[in-house]
Length: 195
Image 1 (cartoon, rainbow, N blue to C red):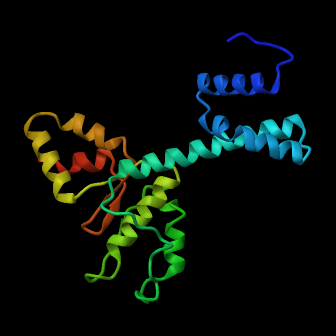
Image 2: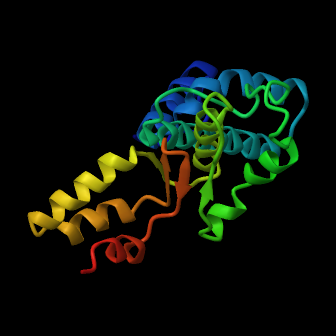
Image 3: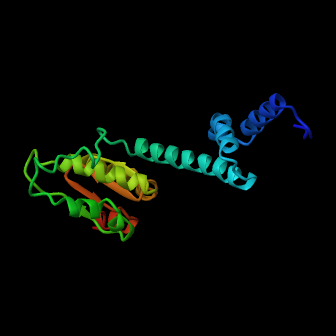
């Protein structure tokens, strides 16, 4: 792409589109015209306009990364904390759940176990807290405890345990519908297989 000075508006728009494609800046490419109009209307400086463009791209990339992490988690359904009915579950403290949603416990490597009767919202909270963790940048994976144990036993039988542990070790948080969320480490898994 050759650089040209004194471009017409049409040529400049085409050049911006082409440059955004080459640099893989889809958000700037899609929103440039609207942002440029707003910048002209608000009499933004060049620096402020550039900052607005770059923040648009950064925000969109962060949103798409979160969406990919949530999809990769393979949760059985789409649950959020906003949709949780605390009135139907008065024994669940909203303040405690909101504290858990900050994911400090994940950063510290602390486990979380949700215990309660059937129909009390454990699965909803499990999925919602796992989703929050993914939105906070953690790699999350939903896995049934039975599937995990079976896969580890099979891997041990086939002398592939260290490879399987390494694969699972890349994920920072596991959510299991046996009402537990835990941080999985190679040490924890290897303890399961000591004889």
